[in-house]
Length: 409
Image (tube, rainbow, N blue to C red):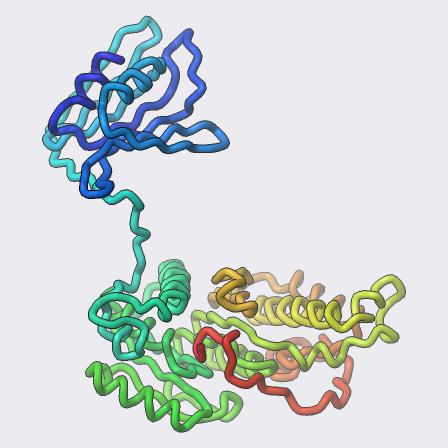
């Protein structure tokens, strides 16, 4: 095995090698070793990454002699070696015999020192320049965070659509509270590039923003499948029932309006990232909670966090009650936005709703609260599920445009 590794690494066609396992009766501190060529400072060197079960260490070698000696001292059992014109597989059998197979191949290894993460939205996508995220095919320094956020969302969108039922006809997409529409344009680009016929409508209350988005749509020539309209979410009535509803950072009960619209039109997919949760936070009062729970709402910061958690937990349970499979998770790091939770729902009729119903009853009774979504879906849920009559908590507060929003940065 040592002779084989030495010959191949010194071969002029060497591209990459993966060494693993331990020969029978020997000891090996390494679980795996990867050897590959890298370009560093205008010179090609050889990089070795040594893996244990808990860590990895990487070293670059300008010459091969020291590298070969270090590697060949380790009693590896398996070797996968790639030359430009062949791939070699080798294995040491229990009795010490070296078994080798060789097959013709056309291996081309990347010499990049840092592997580039594959992103669903390429940096030279035309819409990025129209939106001011990139220039001349490169993402601007000020647009790097936005670019990463867009790609994370599109990854989730792609994974969500891949698990749903087969579609017939165009995918109808509705983006509520679209703002500057970074995600709306990204969704349109991704779906079309993926061969998915779609019609997309972005909705926002700001008339000037809608006019600017429509102007950008015409600049891209996308007006046949993408359009924007001005409306409050709670007043909007779609021309056609949407298949996919998107809403990121719709303030307070505007998120509930989004969820209710999706449910009432039997949307197959729903991706919503809530913003503030004032409506339910104002209902949390220590004096109405069971003893032992009152300290959860005694201090403002804890009351706010508790309101966030209970609101989204009840939203998820209510969606499960009306036939959706629901996940709630973090979709971007907190340094990008503190409002980084995403509610993902896929309609699956016929699901058992008993557990969701019990959860809603327990939470509503324990904290003496009535979530806005329960009011909006009262015709779809059992009568008396949330019997508490919501006190007058005042009109929902709307957050001003700020850096916390993925759309309005």
